[in-house]
Image 1: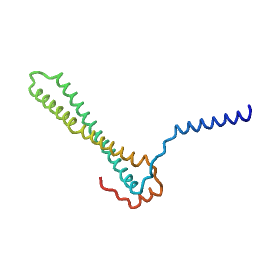
Image 2 (image 1 turned 180 degrees about the vertical axis):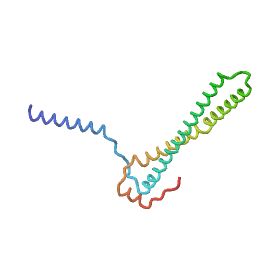
Image 3 (image 1 turned 30 degrees about the vertical axis):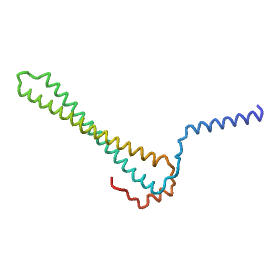
Amino acid sequence: MTYRFAASLLTLLVMGSATAMAQNATPLPSGPALTVEELKGCLCEEPQLEAMRKEIATRRAMLNERQAQLTALDAQIAERRKTLDPNDLIGQELLKNSMAQSAALRDLIQSDTRPALNQSVTDYNALAARYTETCVNRPRYAYDVDAAKQNLVCPLP
């Protein structure tokens, strides 16, 4: 192997590995660096995002709990229907009350619980998109971040 061929081969290998590394690298933030005031806004949005995540988790747990209650109630109704004697007026009244409970719970889920969860997710997604656009996709300088953290006062959510 000649020196010139070996040097050419080495150059191709280095260029090829640099290209592969560039393709796998996380893109660097672009645009103008965040100002101290913009960083303060970003620092204040982070706790808001966390609070919204917790609210979504709470609302999702509430929806799951109500769905489980509805499923159990519907199973109870189905079991009562199987064993109900047509002449049992008290049993029929209990079945009717259970069915009314089931309908009320289903209405609550559809008219309140699920829409509230969906609205919370929509609000979170909007804030997260704004945060990503403003705060994540732009460079920041460490000394500006330190300056923004000093005497930081965020508005109440």
